[in-house]
Length: 370
Image (cartoon, rainbow, N blue to C red):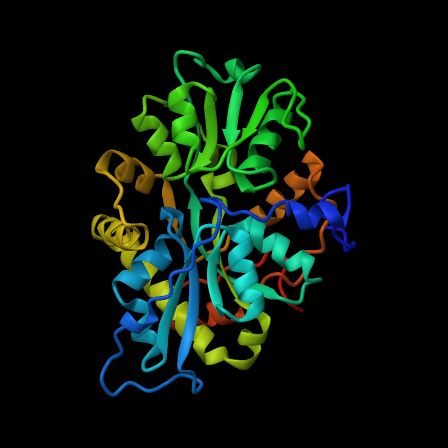
């Protein structure tokens, strides 16, 4: 992509401050941080890594953050960190996690592509690096089958997305444009009415009939199906190989520079967790749901959990080319001016871990540090 200065809305910095586009991740909104690091279990006789008392890890209480959920629940992170405590914070929104990373409240985090892009470009490429992948897929267009029977019927209907400029909003606007329909990106008005609705209330909006469908991540999509909705389109069908990034692993550049051994330890735990998830998906699903219950106070019911879990692919590969494509979709929609993404990835630590595990290396699609 052109190496130009990025801006996030053509209306200028004031609006960016008020409504940071591409900042919210594919989950709920409004932040919640719950640090219960005191409960972490440290193996007897273990040593600290890089002399650190703790490594602070952030993630969302969402199935698309399954690596973090399962890695925490099954102790993979603590095992690799030894006597350095794995301390956790749970977030509901991308901006709060980026702010926590910038302030040093967390060191490493699991987060969606849009807030990673936003955080990197708003800092002039100085605050974070993407150091690994975590999940692909898990996004669907779910509709009221009484009102929408085919893709062409979406025209003229009210479709919810989680937030103006978030990952799913950009994807839906791009899909609409590919149908030849026109929608004003900011207002959501046009051949389709795009209704920006918090994932937490989308099921209520769907049930009441105030929206006719929604382009949303899991588990919201499966919650709508449980309410009588029908999956009209799985976003993975639109991507080569049916893969696209939904969750990345990020780290503050300062922490990466000062504590490379700790970063490698977390990445080893991530790779081990992903291997365990893919080898035993049923037990992994149960572990993820158990941690969700601890974090949110309520586990997902089977009719939501099972289909949601099946639609998410767990991977070490950050699928860097798809992040670049997602950014270009935002530019096409008029929500983003060409960002400078060169240097957003540093996959050297991950590829070192993968090589030691006998696994193939992954690519930064030309967007890595030089």
